[in-house]
Amino acid sequence: MSKKNEEPAEGKEPESSWKDVIYNPRTGEFFGRTANNWGLILLFYLVFYGFLVAMFVFTMWVMLQTLNDDTPKYRDRVASPGLAIRPNSLNIVFNRSEPLQYDQYVQHLELFLHRYNDSEQAKNDLCMAGQYSEQDEEPQKKVCQFRRSLLQHCSGMEDTTYGYAKGQPCVIVKMNRIIGLKPAGDPYINCTSKGDKPLQMQYFPHEGTIDRMYFPYYGKKTHEGYVQPLVAVKLLLKKEDYNSELIVECKVEGSNLKNNDERDKFLGRVTFQVLVTE
Image 1 (tube, helix red, strand yellow):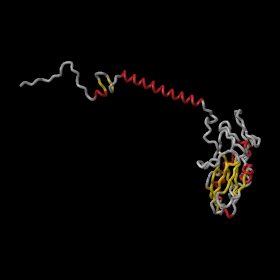
Image 2 (image 1 turned 60 degrees about the vertical axis):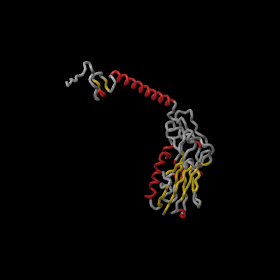
Image 3 (image 1 turned 60 degrees about the horizontal axis):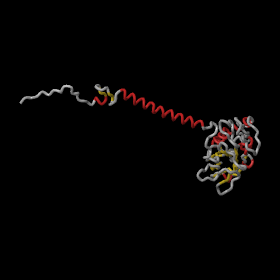
Image 4 (image 1 turned 90 degrees about the horizontal axis):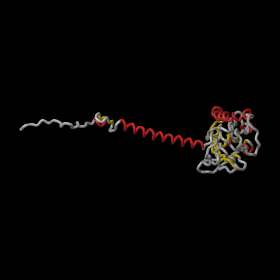
């Protein structure tokens, strides 16, 4: 029986191998596409993504044209300001006989009140008490004076320890800034002890008043140098008040500002603890 020689037929293409998937030398295809096809695909995606980027940049530019550098566009989320205290601690604990224990509070108050120095405030304007300082048309807003000396016994000018050495510490209450806020009525700060026994306090300025002349606030850029009005509360602790934790709550009263929102314990009020030992 004769054996036939197996020879490839004339004109028959050689069999493909796995290497042809990457690059086919016969057709010039790379990963199944010619250089011309890859070029068209690359051009399409360059144009497509370039258009998306240009549209995004244009949209952002249009949106930024609607914003004001000085005033937020939407200001209805927080209608009432929160309260904060200085020294910046909600738990004031010290021994009146140990200066090192209360020195941190004294230094914090001194640093905070530096910009309220009478020499600094002399640069600002004397405004009409009891009236809003409305300056909507003024490009650069004037700043009303709030002199440190208004805090009297809590100014640090008469007593450089702010009452801490005597066991009758001063705490400064301030409202957070809200652009355009004009509280109705005559706002003032009122503090009460949440314990069983009453606690005597003294307010500076008198009766803890916050004058309307410090409102409205126009923003950091246009109202450069603005200082918030302050109320200093001097806790007139007696010997029987020492060595026991006292809880004090301060609220803004006498206006339309909120101070009883259970969802926000700092909205229009602030609570702090004081423990003085000797």
